[in-house]
Length: 204
Image 1 (tube, rainbow, N blue to C red):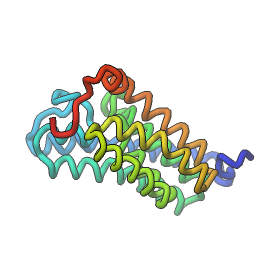
Image 2: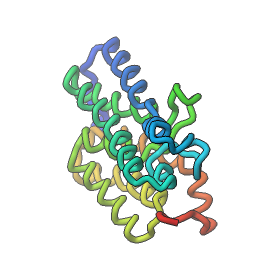
Image 3: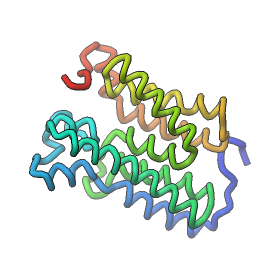
């Protein structure tokens, strides 16, 4: 077994069940649910059309944005913690990845979901909280420097495998690379705007 992956200890059938349940949990579009419940409209028709907290903030309701942020992060963290309690670290990593995929490609919204930043950070905090907090710190530093949400997300995702390489645990490196790659893929339009200098800043 490579040191960059967890040891496979959980029965395949249990892993499969955990993966499906975690995906369904990750698929819950809290941003859409909250904005509809508060009468703020269909989030997919507002701003960028994204279902995450940054776009919820464009409704002008900071409380709704904060709730979306916490719930999107929480669904990744809860999936990890439940899987760890039921099985082990291999199941915890699978659950985190499945919940993340659920947020990006939710079955309830025709597989058109968010960009995964909050779920990415929540998953990391549950898997290895010091690494998760350092990833949050990288995001915050970039926000303070640029006030551009997408640049902060990209920097945090890119920094995480490096943080794990230096501080460990190395068994999370493969997962972190996969999650970071997906964050960058989902931000492809943002990257084009960043290169063109047209990416909006937070509060604009």
